[in-house]
Image 1: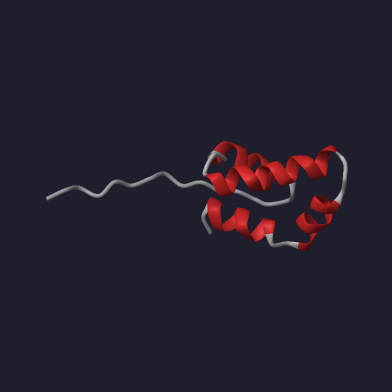
Image 2: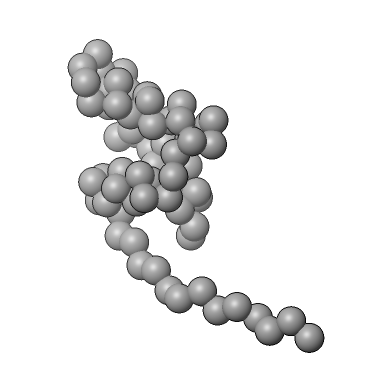
Length: 69
């Protein structure tokens, strides 16, 4: 699963929907995350922090570049 797929999975989860309905700073922060993601302004580091804070486990592998022939 890519970071984008994981973030969209989180946004569609019940936990996210409950937090977004709150009228406190946490709810506002989560609404801002979604807004920035939709605009393309939310970077990979921020997505990783959000996912880790919400119980996701992230594993990264090295990128293997294919040789151009």
